[in-house]
Structure formats: structure tokens, C-alpha cells
Image 1 (cartoon, each protein chain N blue to C red):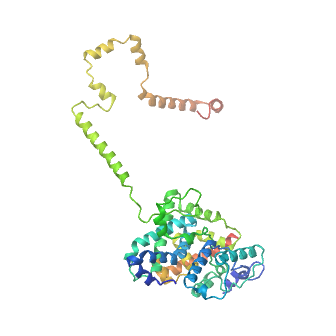
Image 2 (image 1 turned 180 degrees about the vertical axis):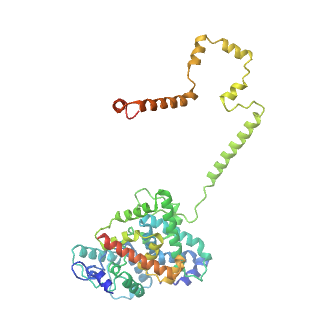
Image 3 (image 1 turned 135 degrees about the vertical axis):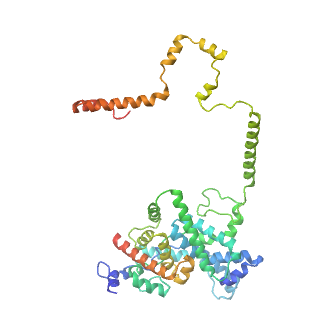
Length: 182
Length: 268
């Protein structure tokens, strides 16, 4: 039985059930967060590193977590920040321009075992990489995670109106990109 | 809306949405995830003693491999091109608002669907338990190549390398003490000037030893020394030569210049 977040948090705050509760939190959210991170960093190894960092940070901060915000959006927020931090580090390490990093992400997609240039699904992935980072996040959260704007607003700390506009622009750009790539 | 319909039309005039198979396993889910899920469910079923209550029995391990079997059948069906076309009306979208919104702004994207295209390694989700990883991280280090599918393990409470800090502190202290003792012992000695000229100026030219050294040299040695060009003047000499070369070139005819260039190597 999957416990609700409130119950998991209550168990986490008790010393004798802390680890069990945390394990359940991981199991509950690991896949959603993994795919969210993976779509940003592309490589599994990088996604795994980022995801572990996310949960480690959650472990350290969960005791002070204020329950006036949802655990779900808080986890997404941490995962988003960790992903962006990781991408920033990659940019600094590689000492290349932003455009080169973006093309690097596209190359990673092309290097994926399952990549098929003719498939629309893969064209979509390549198109997403053409978006600016923030727009890419918005698109992924809305398109793949189907997250309501209200929650997305809490995750990205941006107004709902701005998020809607960003998503619309992103969807249009992607559509154009795929059409022009044919 | 007319524009939207245009987006959904394929080149042959058919509906583009109908040409895409929504259930194709392009977005592969890790096979072992389902294996782990089945085990988990089975464990719960066993715990709840459902098995005993059931009239029917299943072969041992049936559920463990069930997900994999289904996936294999789906994959093989797709590879043979016999997968059934399904309606693309809803795609894979669960949230009605998200679906409607996309239908308005970019209906073409609805036809692609929002399943994952990436694949996680086998058993990744089943093994993602940081508490276990943390406790075993320092205990057992896998042999290289043995557990390549497992990711890097980051300890929750990294142990500080205290001995490293101690060695570094000792090294710094040693350098500081040595330096302090060196300067204290040498503070009365004459400070050596930084340049050769300053150093030469400190030599008492009228001293006996200096005169003796000079008188020990032969005339030839002194002439040779004086004929040796001063290295500090080389730059001005080369600059002078360059000016002269420029002047000579400017006086040349085109034929002479071409002949000169032919005879002059391009690189040195």
C-alpha cells in the first residue's frame, strides 16, 4: 500500500520509522524524478548521479520541510535545480559555448542505442534540445509529466501566465522544427 | 482549426494521427523494473496469504518473468509490422487539460505521444535504494566490469579525510618554521643585489684581489672579451638590419625583388 505524503512525512519524523519512510518516499517518486532529470541531462549515468544527489539533499532537508508546500512539488524543485546545476557544471567543464553544449545534448540523443532518426518520437527529442533551458523544463513538465500550471509555478517559481506563454512558444517552436526537419 | 487539420494530414491525404502506433514500445521501460514490480506484488500477495486463498496455482517464478514475456511479444509483433493501429484520438495523455491545450496550440505533437524514448539500465529502479547503497558503499567495492550497470554510489555522510588535512598542516608548519629560522640566521649577512650591475658596483674595484685578477689576464683574452658583442644590444642590431633590408627592398626593381624572393626560403 502506498502511503500518502502526509503519512510518510509523519513516519519520517519518528526515529524508528525514518529509514523505512524515506525508502517509501524514494520508491514513490524515483521514476517520476528520474525521467524528469533524464530528459534534461540525457545520459543515464548523469541522471543517476543527479537523482542520488537529489535524494541525499532531500534526506538532509526533509526534517525541516514545511508542510505548507507539497512534497511532490518540493521534490521536483530540488530535482530541477540539481539538473540545472549539473548542466551548468558541464558547461564550465567543457569551456565551450552554450550552442556547443546544446548540440552536445543532441549528439547524446543521436548516440542513444534506440535512436532512429526517422521516428517522430526521436525527432521530438532533438527538437526539445533546441529550446532554451527554462523553456525545455516547462515543456517537459507540461508535455511529459502533464503537470498543472499551478504546481509548475511552485516548482519553477514563475507565474502561471509566464509558464503558459512559455509552453505555447515551446510547442510551436518544436512543431516548426519537426516540420522543417522533414 | 483549419490550420490544425492541416497539421494532422499526412502527405498521402490520410490522418497523420492514425499513422502512428501509440502502443509501440519505442519508449522502452526498463524490463527489470517490471520484473521487480512483479516480485514486489508477489511478495505482498504472499504476505497477505492470498495464495492460500486462491483455488488455482501458478508455476514458480511465473510472475517474475511475465512482464518480460509480454514485452518481448510486443517487440516481436512490432518488428513484424503486425501491431494493430490504434486510435490516436487521445494519444498517451492522461490529463484532459494538457491534451486540449496541446490540441489547440500544436496538435501535431499530440500525434507523437508523451511516452519515454530513453531507456534505463536493467534493474535500475529495482536497485535504487540509497539507504542500502549508502550502508554498503564503503563495505564492498565491486570488481571493475562486474557491476557495470550499477551507477556511482555517493555516500550520504562522506567520511572526512582527516589524515590528509593533518599531513597538509604539518607540511605548512615545517615550511614556516624552516623559513623563519633561515631568515633569522641570515639577517646580518649582506643582501645580494638583484642585478649584475648592482653586484659589480659592490665589488671594490680598487681592491688588491680585483687588480690581481685583471693582471692575470692576457692581452688576447681582454681583446676577445671586448670584441664579443653585448647581448643586450642584439635587438637594436636586428632592428637596424631590418630597416636596412626594408630600404634595400624599396630600391629594388620588380624583377630583382622576385629573384630575391625566389632565393629566400619562405620559412626559417
